[in-house]
Image 1 (cartoon, rainbow, N blue to C red):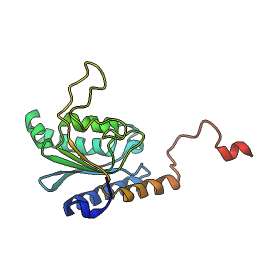
Image 2: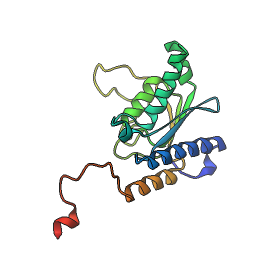
Image 3: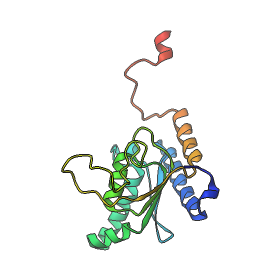
Image 4: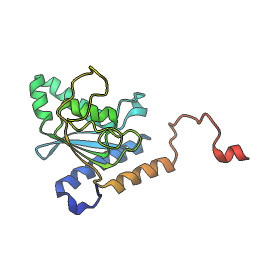
Length: 191
């Protein structure tokens, strides 16, 4: 997994740049800077950014926002479940950070074709860092749980340094929405 642009086709980098733009919008809205786009046949059909603080809903990750946008459009068009499944099976998702376990499971359930991501997610990654929910051979999390999709292709490290840079900028400026620490910071405790 590398962030060198020469390893990927131009359209991959173009779509990842669009995901990074969504992440910048999230950061401007004081959200953790993660953004994504969903592409079908070379065309962006949905985009999303983190909105957990704005909505006060911890499930409103960029991927879930984009998925819900599409589902609402397709609901209005009265598409059947099989029509929706067929469309998702042709879609690719470009996201600035490895999908978390929740998002990777959702992407597997809907049957997305392929995911391209920037930096890994060492705390919550669902595409290899913690769990491999993109792999059709991975075991169910809960015995007797809901059936999984067939899995999806996953490509990481695309423009990773740009994604990491956004995270650094966000956390260096301080997250005004973060809860107050329960224990004193190390430097305060020594004073």
